[in-house]
Amino acid sequence: MSEVEHPAPDATDPEHKAAIVAIIGAPNAGKSTLVNRIVGSKIAIVTHKVQTTRMPVRGVAMRGKTQLVLIDTPGVFAPRRRLDRAMVKAAWVSAGDADSIVHLVDAPAQARALAGKPDGADVRAADDVARIVTGLRDAGRTAILALNKVDAMPRDALLGVTQALHGEGVYADVFMISALNGDGVEDLTASLCAAAPTGHWLYPEDQAADAPMRVIAAEITREKVMLRLHDEIPYETMVETEQWQEKADGSVRIEQTIFVQREGHRKIAIGDKGQTIKTIGQLARAELSEMLERPVHLFLHVKLKENWSEERARYTAMGLEWE
Image 1 (cartoon, rainbow, N blue to C red):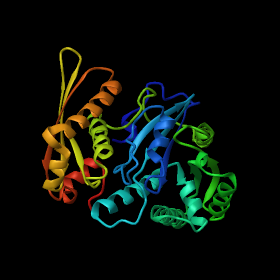
Image 2 (cartoon, helix red, strand yellow):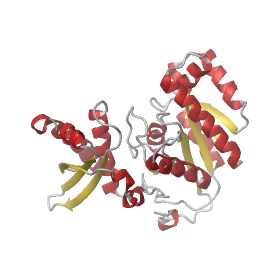
Image 3 (cartoon, rainbow, N blue to C red):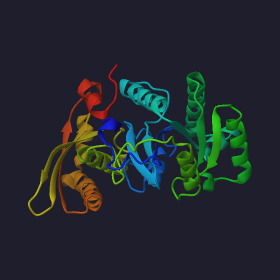
Image 4 (cartoon, rainbow, N blue to C red):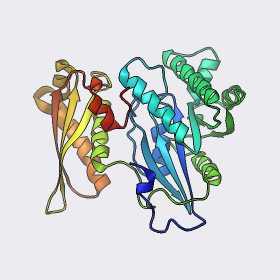
């Protein structure tokens, strides 16, 4: 959905400013948490599992007469499969189209890598950071470096990370933040607002996200699946909202299908006597009811669909490139 399709009613105000900001980073750096924090509501799902975000998700944040359109991008990592390649490509395309780029880095992981005491996840995260630095340099772009999770590390280690990354020459500024508790986030936001060009708002000021509610609802359920089954099922699950029916009493009836790629995973998702799928439904229903501010009747189905990640239509639906 393009920005020009959503002009604000009073967008001709010459004092209005607007900017598209791409948040890029390695998987699990905290991009979705940061976007949700700045927007002030949940528009992107968050789990501890890597590659949770599959498609660029846009959140709209208002600060006075400045509108920031924040793009929560898929993580940048070494892709192996078609879906991986499409996700990484989407992240770089979003960065290329943005007015500003924020490179979010898991500072404690980077510090452990620099100190020579990393675990496997730290090594991968450091490699992904280096990959992003190279990508920025090759594209001739500068970014704002946001060191995340700084509340979980000593100051001397943080200084070492700052010096090492700032020395790469691709960062215009550095902010130290905690996306989870909000430390430093408003300073970062203020800087993005100050750099925003004068121009029409891209969305109505009361719109928090540029995604149909059917898509957001499916993502909420996928989040619950990942949180509940992270040890049993790989991240290759998909949720689709099949039906959305507005009821006369103000409630909404939603039917969704959870697609898995193996029969064994289907049985795990359903659980003994249907208990697992019931729990997932309860968690998703509660959050959707709160988000929509009305009763939600949620019905979940689990279906086997081998190789769904190799179907062109799925990529189009997620806003990803097939080739």
